[in-house]
Length: 166
Image (cartoon, rainbow, N blue to C red; front, top):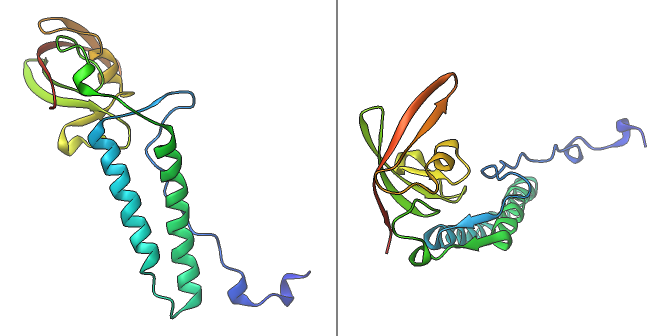
């Protein structure tokens, strides 16, 4: 059928659904127990938003519902693939997934926790386990050091302390 015979309001563009944090193909979706709880909370919030959509304007309702449904689909994929890591089972003397690490990077003391990709947030000092720095720290013990490359610069990183959340 020619586009000339289609109503203008029927020519809606599909809504943009923002992608979730990148998780490389084939990489296990590790999450902390808190990270899993946050994903569940997000799901509950999306379900509540969907339930409370304003149905007065059908076009707006359809568009908003499509956005929520798209987000929900991506979120459900993450929930299905989540592998919760029990932080109590992690080796206490070694940096592994979930570790809260105090380290020295070029004479500056820093703190971070290694978490899942959906939980990562630099403002909260949480980095994804797939981040380059997390990969360098992984497996190190207190007192050990390694080199960390940032572009063409190499910096020394030394572990000062390791702990796991209760």
